Image 1 (cartoon, helix red, strand yellow):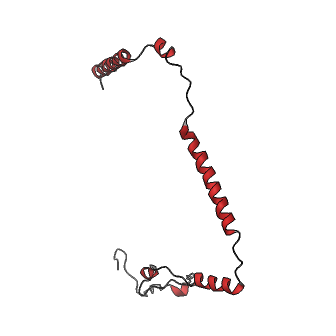
Image 2: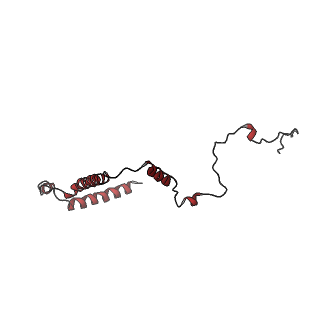
Image 3: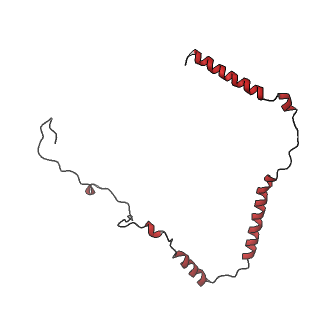
Length: 129
């Protein structure tokens, strides 16, 4: 940037400031503007009404199920077995052919690593194998 660019930028910003100042209202008119007391906003009561209706619905649901008869032990066991035997219909998509997840973590020892055998021949310096 040179000095001409700086002067050009300053002039452009000054023109923008003058344009904004011409369209802005005076401070006196802003300070003596309307002083109307805000009315109660109905939208702030929406969360309170939603919470109250949720509490009422929960109370009704709890009272409606409170008179339910006790299930026998055999019925409870049958229901638990039924739930435990359920499988998702998409489980078949998860099976991969010839893929098994190991049950344990493999260990790495020197016997499990195949090391190259050292040759008994000496190679002259400067030659590589």
